[in-house]
Image (cartoon, rainbow, N blue to C red; front, side, top):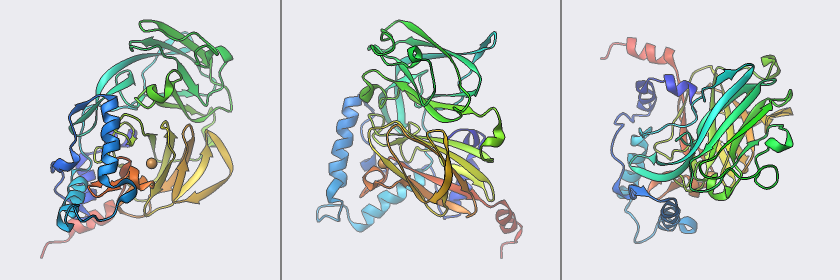
Length: 371
Ligand SMILES: [Cu+2]
């Protein structure tokens, strides 16, 4: 989720929420939702598990010793009022490159950083270039690309180009196609993006991967078609990388609600959303209010696009969908495994919003003198 929200005037988001009467953004999170400040990845997982039990998990019903109606409602309201909460660090921005002849040269440094996934909540993240997700790689069919990967981690690593057709020795799997990249070493990958390989792909670690990938060694690798007319047109684009590892347990683009970013569109626009699942679990992404037109899976155009409102995304899968922003308002947008999204303490984790702005209606409202 980058391009539009980069340009997004924060007031516009607040204006969108204002339509719901939610004008008091910036209210602090309820103490119940603020867990510890800095936590190791392992502690974070333990916290998450504890949070599950505490939030109900399989017994998420009203309990005699639980919060009162007023307390529960207040916790829910405060989370929504805090959205979209500002945090330090933003992943998924385009990775700059230099040209060496006709080769696009990208530099990736693997390093451990402290990452704020939610306001006041940090975890130890394993990253490309210090951000989660790693920077977005963009290239076009036919491009020659080179990646200098420097390992500053306390473990070996390797980079797998998930979904890309590469020569066998560039596939990034230690002891199958290359030696591991030891701490302190730099390894260089180079290949040509093949025709027919356009679409939403990923790059991630393929070494101790259940830990390294879910800790943040992941990113989007988007391949543009040589001929743009081969794929559907859109007005704005968002990438949503789903993860359920140590980074805040259930995250979208390295952030957890209320620190996730909303998708924002003007009424009438068509939004392209690319889902990528880098986690260990499935995540059915559910958009309220508007339908999703699924047109590509793992980069491949579907012979018959189809509509849905809930799209199940398994680990490793990518789906590309179009949403026509026809319905003004702030629409909930979340994983529908509800224990990844909402508890007695309010919404958390894999929750964001799709905001459709109606400039004409807003202008008309402003032009109407108040009585
Ligand atoms: Cu989920």
